[in-house]
Length: 151
Image 1 (cartoon, one colour):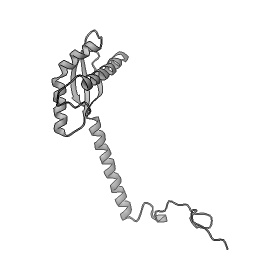
Image 2: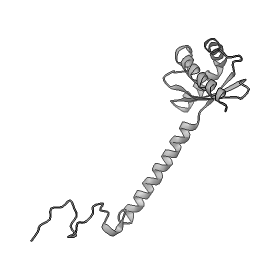
Image 3: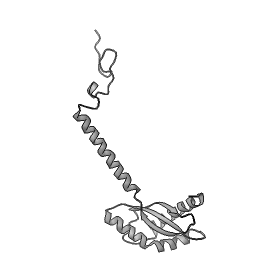
Image 4: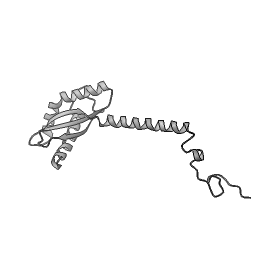
């Protein structure tokens, strides 16, 4: 994207976010649960893909996305009044899957970490050589944090 399209994308993201928050009164769209995450503007500025993330059940997410798609013309008309562009891009609302993919990745990492922990426990601890102790031994062989008796 060129600097100009990036600047326009940020402006559209901010403006559409404000419109959804303050101007849309569709009961399917809860402004507290919908956020405009990013916007991709075509180089010719005729189209803008508006990515949105919605909290809630799958059905609530689908309904909110449908409501945004249904209100796209109205949102675009309000945006035309707010932003002065030669041509206002046609808005296309799509679900942003990045958040869902991030959650899936984190769940996979957590599962893998749990499996590793279970394997280490079954094998006798994380490091069989010292019984799993993270303490370092002093010069007399006693752990550093223990009180030593000197003869």
